[in-house]
Length: 166
Image (cartoon, rainbow, N blue to C red; front, side):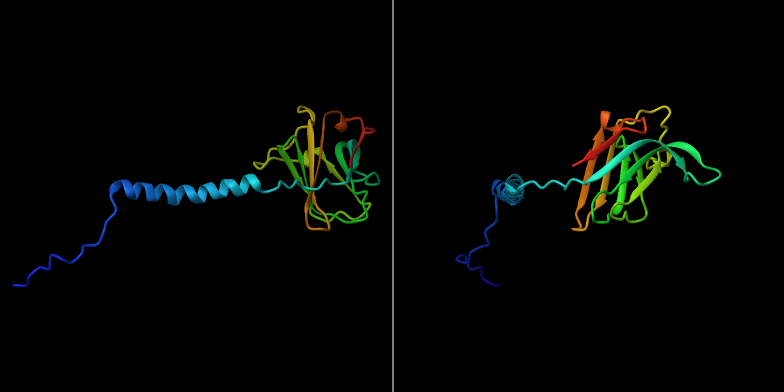
C-alpha cells in the first residue's frame, strides 16, 4: 500500500463568494470602459446637403410627351459643383424613393409623389395624406452621407413654393 504524504498541498479553489465577485468584475469592468468611451467620445453630425426642393404639379414623364399628365412631384436640384451618388428621399419618414443614377452638378431630379413607397410596397397617397416632412440623403464627393430635412411651410404644395437648405 502506498502511503499518503500529508505535507503535499492540495490546489486552492475559489469559494462561491469569490467566484461571484470575479464574475462581477470580469463583466462590469469592460462594460464600464465601454460606457466611459461612449461618454467621452465627441459626437459627429452628418454634413448638410446643399439642395433646392420644389413640390408641386409637373408634367410627367415630360412636357413634350403626348401622354403627359400633370401629377404632384418633388423636384430636387443640385446647386453645387459636385455630383451626388446614392440619392434617397423619404416622405414623412415612412415612404421612400431611391434614385438609381448619380445627380450631376446643377442637375435636377423630378419624382412623382406616387413613386414613394413603404418597405411593404404601400404607395404614398398625396390626395389623402399630407406631406409633413421630406428628408433627402445623398453621398457627396468626400464619401460622407449628407442630409437635408424639410418640413411644414418649407414644403408648400403650390408649385411656386421653394425651399432651400443651407
